[in-house]
Image (cartoon, rainbow, N blue to C red; front, side):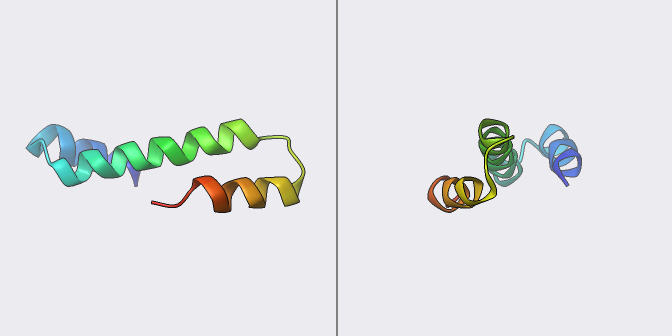
Length: 52
């Protein structure tokens, strides 16, 4: 999905595609931050930080 959005952004300079790429990047950063943590903590962090 991210690659498709990136291709659209490059081809059309779409602001919507750019916003989606930034949001996906933010979600990926959250996942990197919580990798290896207990499941309950991961769930709490996702609920707190992954809202748009």
